[in-house]
Length: 160
Length: 292
Image 1 (spheres, chains in turn orange, purple):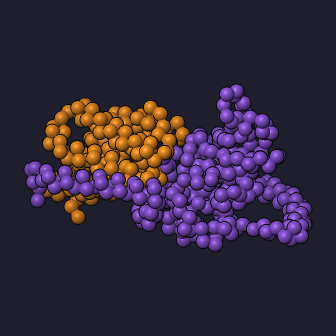
Image 2 (cartoon, rainbow over the protein chains, first blue to last red):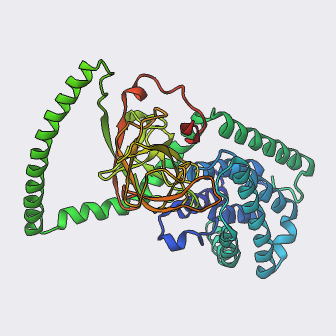
Image 3 (cartoon, each protein chain N blue to C red):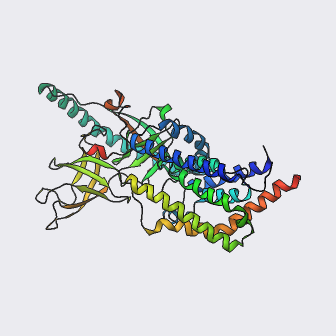
């Protein structure tokens, strides 16, 4: 297995761990969507490796982890990763602030899709605060980007 | 090989196919509940991660037990022994009452009461959806857990299993907004349906007319209608009764008796009805059908 793919998988597992880590009640509604953040980074950094199919499976795992309807997060992640794939060259050269704004839009869009499916299925959709995780995610994006980039540089380019 | 440009059409095509597939999956899962094996397989992949995350909490409980002082253990032991004695005295009385009840039922040629078996499970400390009242327990299909099996703790009814996987299960609490539980008022026998509100401390008792005899402090117990929950388990206490003129029914709120956000150990009740093949009764994850 190529080492960049290995780093991608390890970081995704870490993202899943963060997604189900128990947190105090007040912090629950601020928890950013770590898996989507990691998928956005890897779709941008390794578009030939991480594509819509991996997004689909990551989404299904997220559905199982959240006890949601199967396919709910999958459809959101597939569309988000597709948009990132189309624009990955532009995104790579954008500043961190610009990237964070795009990430905010993507996270809001995914949250909206998830909420929409909840609404159709008759589950509670929550109030305006369901969008808090997207805001937190966008604020954290620069750190996610820098940490994952440094990890990738450290473990991938060392061998080249 | 690293190409500079991705193959546009094939990515778009794949995206569309996967979106369509997701929609098909959602429909199958939500409307027909046919995807239990997919969920179960995926959750087996997730279980090691859930287990690992729970380890520190497990370690804390273990350390708490191991490192507690001899004196504290002695005190606890003494208190438990006293409690045990008290319980046993009460059980004796209950035993006699139960036998008498059985005899009387036989005289009336009513159906005998079924006895329930229980299985102890532990809650795995992982978070699920913050907007739903779900949690994960460490017992699954391999331990004999079935779908829609009632869960109770020492104080009352907690909920039921929503998804059953090989080693773990997802449990829906009675406070989940999509949960409905047939109950009756212990004092009067008045029957109704108790709905979850999405908040841990409140439940909504619906379809009670204004002139019904119900007041704050009334105990609600399971009525056993719907066939999923065994009858006569305590569920909640009525906290407020509001009779608003112009509305068809009274507004009644109740507080669950079970310690929904404190218990770590829960009991799975295996009813005879569930044992005799309730597996085919997979009317989606929701219990709203219980109401009918």
